[in-house]
Length: 294
Image (cartoon, rainbow, N blue to C red; front, side, top):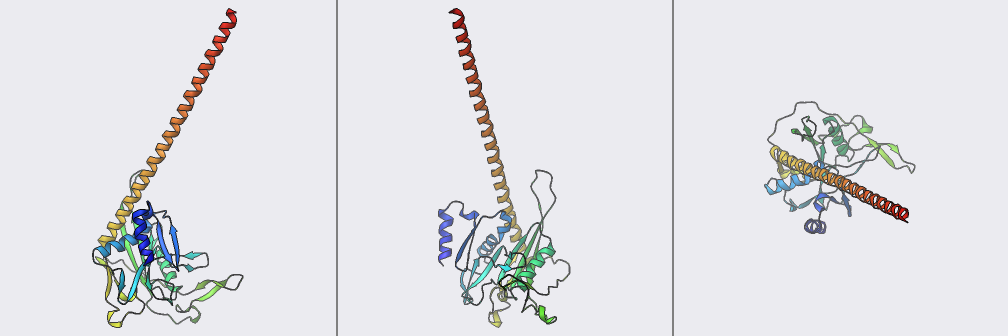
């Protein structure tokens, strides 16, 4: 695709391109500057999985082409909700939504991430087949010390079934509850019911064809599209956090240099001011001496 060719070219020829978040959505190129590299782990994770032979290959697979693309904007009562990364089926012209969306949470608790996943699934009427919510936790740290990764929780959220009662809140038909001045719905409502349970310790999490593709052949629906080892997730997170620390250290060093430069400029200005005063004083004294001799 033209976008992937351009992305590949830019990564080699445009300095700093790899630090940007580049999305192509509805023929619009979206360029964003990430405030935190921690939220940008998914693309690197998918690339690493593909290199290990655990992920779908780019290009045509199963009769459909999958791309890593832009965000799936879901209109909410207050703004829009957009996941950190999405997987799209190319040629799926009926749907603008991705099949899989990824959310990465640091400060958010698990309940918040769960509700975010529910909103993405429910308010697209289940057209987003799977939401992966990754919660990253750190141990507390001493002042100035780097944070230590404590745990990574992988939330795997999908639509199990459409709940009939109550009729007006059916998940396959979310009902508008707020409108703008033109009468266009701006917020919808649906029933969201979470499940409480203990975390399972998994070596790897599997994403199936029925998550990645909307209507795969029945005999292929339960086949594994990609396997995500817990070890690989932690490695990618650790790599990104090290990159963030390196960037923070570079920023601090640059600030210190600027401060030193400012101090040097102040000392230089002070030196020249004192030099001017000394010269002026000597000139005044010499003039007074000459007047006295005259």
